Image (cartoon, rainbow, N blue to C red; front, side, top):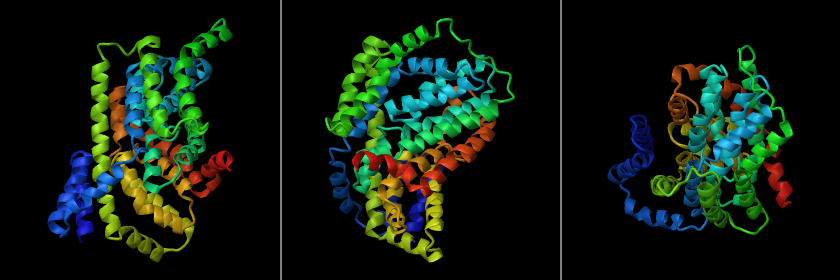
Length: 428
């Protein structure tokens, strides 16, 4: 009854708009008052789990992403993507998908990707006669690529919770991310095939223009190369790479793209600090709740319940995916990951799934859930960024979920090599 009451309290608080950390805090109060548990006894666990050098990478990547977002890094990336595919029918919106994948790998944040790419691309799409509902929905559907293309803060958290290699978890989501980009572009082409679009003209000196725009975007593209090259080359740990990302982002934003100025450095740091505070508080509270779930053997009970329904691995994985979708629809990717990973990992391991494989499934699942109505935080943020009514975005969003996100999820879940091939290739 305490568990059911806790879930009820959590769902009610989230649905009425209470922030995620305070919602989980309400659950802790409920457990302490009605469950006969001394919540303070779980506090050392939260402190001990938070005292991790791996976890330090999260605030550093958030800071680097904030600096690069304010530093106008997205504009040159969009410019290159437009040059490559802007002359094709539907190519301008496909450029938004490619730009989201690239910027997502730099910021590691779906919300930051949506804010930057959406604010830059939407005026271009409207000027080219793209229907605003499908165009805005595509931008929203592409922004969670920041959770899949490494480095990803979500994968760092999963590796920390599941005691897995951060590098393997990074690599596990690369192929699913590429599959998703491909499917989103195909769905976009089908949706735009009858639209009367204005295509971009080919520049008179295409090679010279490509070199010019590519040179302009090179400092931005160099950032993920430095980070990932340093990590996989054995030069830096993920935490050290996050620190290097911050150091690299400051001069690039100040002197190359000049979006970062002495006047807006403090607001940028304040924004990053606020985000970091919320995220780390959320991690602390959710870790304590997860510890309570483990203490009460809720993962074991959930495992017994699912296996009592069916011992078929396919059915089990389908049920696990359904649970993750429901969790992701109620909360953001970080809190959803922290709650679902310790709860569901023992179940999928019993069904024969590798923990690194589960990292990719979890990443795709939570990314899709964040754009799935009725809650869909990224969908509502996208409506605000692109100045598009949610009602116009719903139908194309469901189409992209059905024909891009769901196929990617099913392929990632039931074809293990999609997630494991690259980690196995790199690490043997």
